[in-house]
Amino acid sequence: MTIAANRRVLSGMRPTGQLHLGHYHGVLKNWVQLQHEYECFFFVADWHALTTSYDDTAIIGQTVYDIVVDWLSVGINPGEATLFVQSRVPEHAELHLLLSMITPISWLERVPSYKDQQEKLRERDLSTYGFLGYPLLQAADILIYKGGHVPVGEDQVAHIEMAREVARRFNHLYGREPGFEDKAEAAAKKMGRKNAKLYFEIRRTYQEGGDLEALAKGRALLEAQQNISLGDRERLLGYLEGGGKVILPEPQALLTPESKMPGLDGEKMSKSYHNTIGLREAPESVTQKLRTMPTDPARVRRSDPGDPQKCPVWRFHEIYSSDDTRQWAREGCTTAGIGCLDCKQPVIDAVLREQQPIRERSVEFLNDPDTVRAIIDEGCEAARDVARDTLDDVRQAMSLVYR
Ligand code: TRP
Ligand code: SF4
Image (cartoon, rainbow, N blue to C red):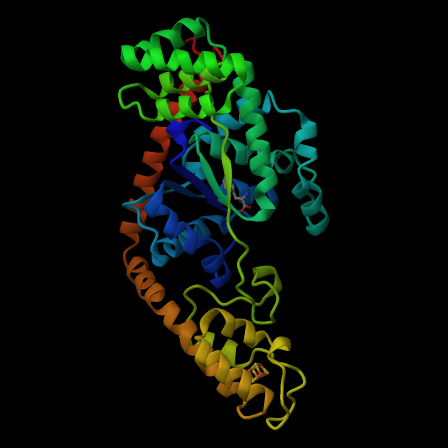
């Protein structure tokens, strides 16, 4: 990965309906944290929704809007992160097309989600070109921002790996710009005489002996340079490593720990399991859902003792309750000292408490659609500026600049 890009984070989410607490605990809380530490780009992957739901496109627009409201409501701050919509940055599509020329079909066919999803979504015909190309579109999404880190779940790691391979192949094919060596040497001089000398020494040490410490030193040296352009930095990095210019840096998966958020039935919270609590669902409805959620089936009567390990409510206590409350619940359950509704009350309170600020902020945004639209417009513009720059580099490298 190039140094210039390694403080950048990019991630996307498919618009699949309103978000729930599983998304919050699994993804969004992490994004909120990342926005303070990295330059973040978060986007709604609406074209990706088309790869599986091409026959039901009418609802995508509303969903896109809802997702952005959800993001804003949980505290993703447009002052810190760039929020945008994939289809509003058509450069993704151009890069996807160009990358498709160099991507072997076998790379796409062997991505595990290709066969898995086809099996899982049997009712849909997924033998389409777009569905096969899905991971390559995702690679374009990432590479166009020279995204260093990509926060994703385990299920997406293979896609990031493919993006790395595509970047590597691209750099290998097109990184050898005409006069690369001369350009790299000229770039080195721009670091000043002392640094240039050091750079050449380090490069010789690395290339003659494969000394990894020297490589690390060289990278650090380049990282510390304030006065060289991104292009020159990438040239110098490529020249140091012995390849060509790194045009599309290889991204890295930033593995998001699997969410422990259970659904109402104790399974993973997921829309397809119908066991969700909406991020900004009305309190009455949340209360009702939690009050009626299943418990240890052994507790038929109030006087039957139960086993928290066999109860989905306990999983909620594990996330939401203090040690004291957990102690109280376990004790009360195993001795039949409390009823299940008693046991659920602290969970209900905690979930409502967690949702309250989210719900309040969402009301503000829902009452002010102009602001939401403006945030989206600005994010799309900012994203486009970056995407256009990358695409200029890409066209240049591929010798596609003629008019
Ligand atoms: N494929 C991702 C998912 O289904 C969404 C996505 C699309 C994405 N493009 C991306 C995630 C780029 C990270 C980076 O969850
Ligand atoms: Fe579950 Fe609590 Fe009822 Fe025990 S008392 S079965 S942990 S809800």
